[in-house]
Length: 392
View 1 (cartoon, rainbow, N blue to C red):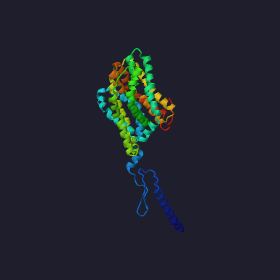
View 2: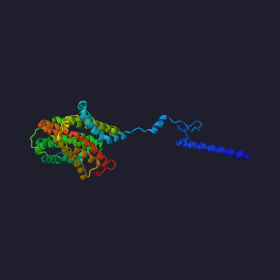
View 3: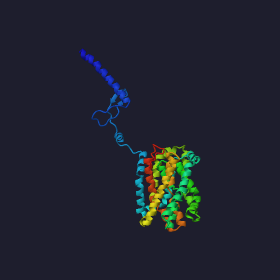
View 4: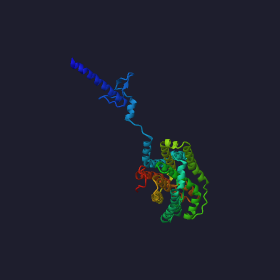
């Protein structure tokens, strides 16, 4: 009897301590699962403060969220970036094989590129553009490569390799007198480069093209060609200047919140937009691909190698100047890509038909080369490391 009386307070004390321990666990959300239980949740208290149950069922939706996490925008961006070297050639092949169907997208290219430039410029601020103009060394290096180094290289290759075919030699030179490509800005944005430097480089080169192109034709080709650039300047303004300025104004009006909040989504828009532009542009070279002969195949290979040298020169200049990663990426694409449309318009308007081929055929590989360069940048010049650790 005495043993029973002594045991009762002990049991009551154990029960009280158990309730206190359960309450503390519940307050911290640390209730453990019962062995064999399938639906485990947190316990609830009654109005008196007593623990009702430590085994409340958890909703099925909560278990589903734990087991299968949704794909984030950043993960989707990385997946699309990794796939670009494979998707771009596929888009080119589709445009070449189905020009009649895909060609219906061609009228939409200016509007799509308007959106691409707006999305790529949405994170820009006026201060970043002002910084580019205050330190113009990278911009001047891009312009020097575009309109001095590369034309001299193209002239030397044309004189040595195509002396017997002067019309083709003129086309080789003419391709590397064209201004930098507006599509290069999209690739700079995709690779995380300096979008202010890329935007200013495209705009400055477009504005100066009425001076650079006729002067280059006169010096390297020897023809006194009067080139009307008013339509070219207007097209570049609509596709580059206007959307870029609008994006900067919107971001400034929002105090930078537009670029920060919508940035990941806009990066996806840039990637999808440039793929659509590539798909539509590929339809223009379908007849050329079907009529290749050994000479034209050699011209294609030479144009590829010379254009690849532009990317290497941009990287070498960035490394020699010890610029940061963003500037190096912008210099790579600013020096390597050309506005083929501008070169084609000049070739068709003022030169023989054979001169057009070296210019137009660059469309066949320019976007593929840009995608391969993006893959090299991602591996050799990672965003986390920065600096100049790119190994070639």
